[in-house]
Amino acid sequence: MLRLVSQNLRRMPESSLPADDEYALLARIVEGDTAAFEAFYKTYYPRLFRFILRMTRQPEVVEELIQESLLVVWEKPENFNFESKISTWVLGIAYNKALKLLSRNNRRSQDVDIDEWADSIGDEAANPARRCENMDWLGQSLAILSAEQRAVIELTFHDGLSYQDIAKVLGCPENTVKTRMFHARKKLQTFADTQEVQRKR
Amino acid sequence: MNQANSTLSDKHHQIMLLLPWYLNQSLDDAERQQVESHLRSCLVCAREFRALQKLATAVKQSSDLAAAAESSFAGLRGKLTDRTTASGVPPALAEVAATAGHPARELSSAGRMPPRRVSFWGQRALKPVALAASLLLITLPWAMQQQVLPLGSDYYTLAAAGPAQPAGAKLRVVFAKTVPEKDIDMLLKPIAGRRLEGPNRAGAYTVGLQDSQEKTDVDAALAHLRRQPGVLLAEPVVQSESP
Image 1 (tube, chains in turn red, cyan):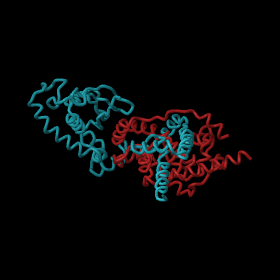
Image 2: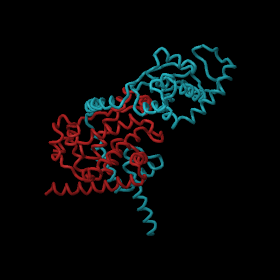
Image 3: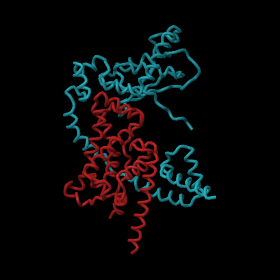
Image 4: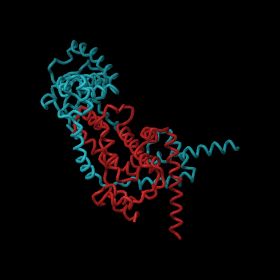
């Protein structure tokens, strides 16, 4: 089923603004301009959605974490220190909030049975997180990784960040980023080999 | 011999660690060349690279989230209203204003920099702005004495013409909502600026400066704009070099 659904995913370029425009929006947000915040919110929503869902594998928390993360931008734009890209700052906020939530729920690194929370989130069609996760055949493989490893994979291959920028987002040394990716790859390879053996039986 | 093997193994491992970022093209030139050179002779890394390509392709799959973003913000809008004062100023600013004994709106309309804005500029641009402002103070009277072009002209340079510099420098400028459309050109006049485009969806205008601007002129223009209460952001437009 998971292989089938990937064919249904529609490739959509996620909205993004040139860096200059992001600074322009942030300047207006500092002034309390809600229209600017709305544009900023809609720009970052798809990216954070993917990132948080990939990292937490808990669709029911994605919306809440996106709103909490972006509200920080609205309420404390002065916290941006200009030492990184705006996207690095925003992803870092989301990463820390997601980690805190996972820690609170004591569900880190656990595989989640989608059916387990099906009742709690209602209609699949109305819930993009549920729909996306169900359709994501990769999700099953990534479930064996830790949240931190999934974050590195997402930021590398979807967001195209350098390992230096990822280290800033995650607040860890650059070597840690590299080794997280390395060990994640090892786990994925082992998982894929096991699946292959089972498939042939 | 063992030491040589160990060194090779270490290098192989270091290269393998870099492969994901070679794939996403974010390595610097030196690292990229190391990886390329190694890939030509290492079958293990070449195989790993192909596996990473498949993983990257899968991860890049995206879904349609535009509609979700729309409804999500609609849900958040209520919270924003709750957290915002009647003046539309975020609570952090309102609190600072209240502490100072002024309604937040008065702070803005009086042309004073709101506290949040001071912080915005203060962290990144205070030193460059101070430097640029100093340059402006130094160069402007001199330029005026030279009467390069008469005051009041639509086109004049801030300093005497120097060697050809970035021709047609452009700035990205965001004006406060309180600045009427008709006043924008007046704000740009002292720097011989002209609106070229905008506002874009981020509310930014592209402003062209007169040709053959010195870099110091651009800095001075930026400093001038940043001192205007009606200007929220002024940044140079970085133009990519033509191949």
